[in-house]
Amino acid sequence: MAIDVLPWLLKGKEREEYDLLNDVDNIDMFSIREVFYVICCLLGIIGTRVAFNSMITPWAGKQARARNISQREMNKVLEEIWVLIGNTVTLSLAVYVMLYENNGCWFGNTAPCLVGWPNHSVNPAVLLYYTIEFAWYIHLLLKKPLGYGEPDGKDMKMHHVASLLLLFLSKAFNLTRGGIVVLTLFSISNPALHAAKICNQMAPAVRVPMFIVFSALFMVTRVIMVPFIILHMSIFESVKLIPYAVKDFMVPFIAFNVLLVLLYVMQIQWMWAIIKVLKKSAIEGASAAAELSTKLDPSKRFASTNEEKKRE
Image (cartoon, rainbow, N blue to C red; front, side, top):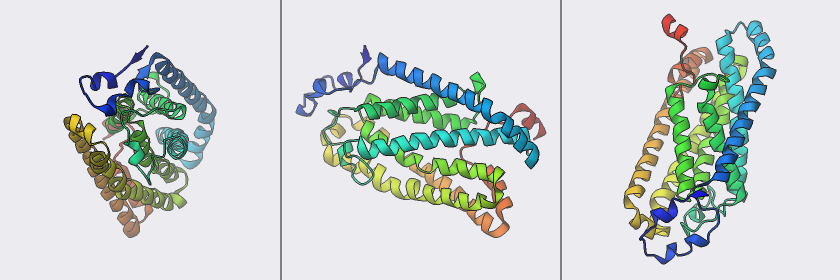
């Protein structure tokens, strides 16, 4: 049993490019088996998180007392450590899949992402990556109701939902090749961000160098590379390589590209905030920069507790 989107999407479209659709493997959006795999992976991640909390909480308590850090601040550090581990694992898998299992579609050549659409087979490595990513983002949304992690702020919840939507739509419309490229590019700077947040509390001596590393990765991957890779692929290469699809689905084509441009504008805004932090660090020192960084943090990772709101 499966939910098939492409046959419905292409119904009534008389083009030879669509004729082979029924002969391509694994193009259904989700089979019951795939949903079962996501649920199993989700339970595994949650179980691992609970075990992680159990093992590291005693160490965290000692560190909080030794460093004179509040328990809430230490809980934030634990959250960053967990997310750093998860992001490093998913990024490593994404890079491997993009380089070796994505039919030649990667940063240096995005044409294979589009050529021959919609007749793209999805190999098991891609399905594994999508399964893990689906489970990872769902587990982040379940932290508060299940009580195994710090609750995220509204911006981060929106980010998780947007990531799930990207995974969902790219799988539904058999655009996983391009989806792999987009997800990989936007994930590269994430581990450095969480490492910088950990250093801000646990290793002040290296917090500025770590933040500079994050800033450089963010600048290169999300500001410089996005127009030349993601936007070029979605706006220009699609018109050149699959003009029939652009013609048949003009409204979705425009909508997707408007969303991508807006996403890029958001990266520019975040980069400007990062530059402010770096400037503050150069002029007033690391402590002042850390305070500004907290105020400008675009992720607003942690939701405020009622007690903190009262103190405010």
